[in-house]
Length: 237
Image 1 (cartoon, rainbow, N blue to C red):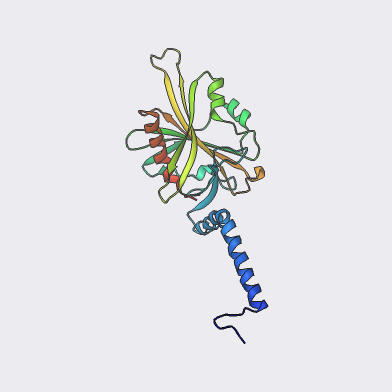
Image 2: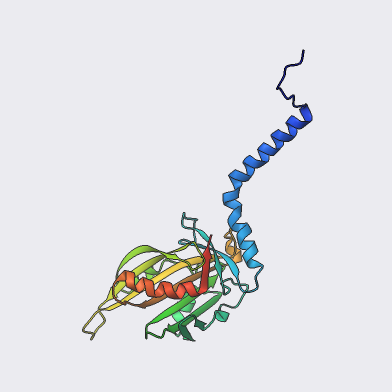
């Protein structure tokens, strides 16, 4: 006699079910890794958006690595001088590096130095340093230390307009210049950009750094710099 209420599943059907379950499991495992790339590719299909990998370090990956969408090109297959001079409320001008020792020491493939002003009268320097070797890159605190500055270090998160957070490092530096009544203070914020998740040195690295005088507290100064950064980077994944 046949048992009532039971459904027998044949071998072919059972095999299909097992395959479907295995595929579903694979999707759940690998989706967090491939989703940023897929979303980045969709964004890159737009003519005005470019996808990069941003991180705090260029030697090794950190847990702050993010895929970021930018409205300007920050890779060495482009001309970094094409980054807009008008960025939101900020208007810039090129200021060529006159210290040839810096250029000899870094030997960058591309080097851009600009001074930007906003309508509030605040200003900041944008430095873009690109290369396909490790020579152009070192933590900015090395330069400050060698030149006799006192400094503090930290990290800062910038929430982007279209979602996600961009992470960077900041350095607060102070030095008493000869003949000046008050010490000179600077705050720099920086991170590294790679053209894709492979982070191959031959494909190039770009250091993105903004530097300004201190406007109030460190946090208030970083907020001014963050306003500039948000004009160029739209979203983090």
